[in-house]
Amino acid sequence: MNKNRSSNKSGAVTVILLSFLLFYFPSVVNLFSYHKGPPGRDIVNLLLSTVYTLIFCLNYFLIIPKSLFGNGKKYWFYGWNVIFVIAGLLIIPIWLEIRGNVDPHYPHQKGVKFIFDSLVFSIRDGVMMILSIALAYALQFSRERDRLQNRELELNAERRQIELRSLKMQLNPHFLFNSLNNIYALIGISSERAQEAVHDLSGMLRYMIYDAAASGVPLQKEMEFIEDYVRLMKLRISPATTLTCKVSRENTNGLHIAPLIFMTLVENAFKHFKPFEGKSFISISIGVVNDKVVCEVINSYDVTTVEVDKENSGVGIRNIHRQLDLLYHGHSSFSLEKENGVFKALLTIDNIALCK
Image (cartoon, rainbow, N blue to C red; front, side):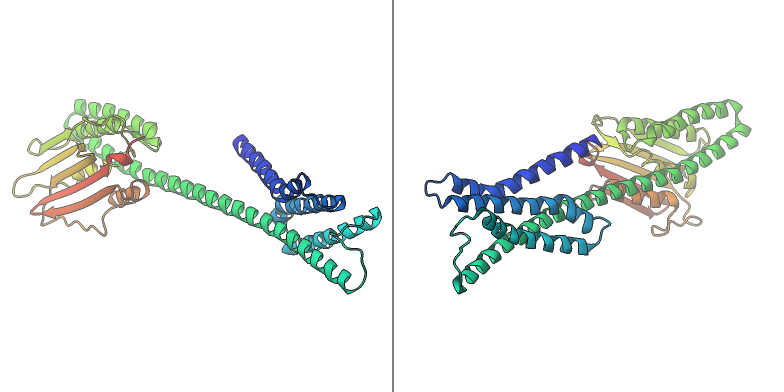
């Protein structure tokens, strides 16, 4: 708020200085020049400069914001400026008549030449007044356009944050539902393992509630969360299933990533893996390779019962696509492949998009 006020004051001062420089500078230069005209002409020029400046400032600070860019009516803009121009054209002749100055700038001779010269000077002064109004409008229009563009950027950022929060809200219950199902299954198998799972789950929920609420978390923390989740899921799967989890923390310093972005891939591997030809496996690999963060998740599936449709995949996969588009557009890739009983998900994000 204070920053905006300071910026507005600074902008107002700049505009006022610009108007003085534009309208008064020629008259001041002429006033102190070596070749001076009649004294009356210098006074007339300064008076006209004052009129131009007043018209400019009144339009910039009051009339245009209220009538054209505010809640006012446009006819106020035209009406007031017609009055200003007419009044400005009458000020000089009235002032000269009162002062009784004889000034070649406003000739006092009679006849056709007097009418012609008066008309020429009136057109010149009128054009200058109109130009001062046009300049005020151009500056205000540029200011209003910048304000609207900044507002649009702010709204887009707010919409993006709202959408990202919505995506997280969809993911969190999904994760909790699956974890509770796993713990429920463990209770009948081993109460000690179920207790360990509850303990691990409480730590993971703490991460999801507090750390994952931020727009970005250190990549190392996200990796630790994945390792905790894999350890939790390992309590349930059969010893016959080969589980490999390789998480490398090399070259991860200074890198921050959107929280839980790998979670869906790892979770789906445990949810959908099936034995194929008597073998079942899950392989998870996360690390930095060639200036990219790479997450590769591979699992076996039963080709006779599982069919993966890229276009109509689940909520989690759609959320990944959307988060990548919102956060890492142009700096990420995501692919899903299935072949001969092997399902592979590969997600890569450029390091440059993760640096803070």
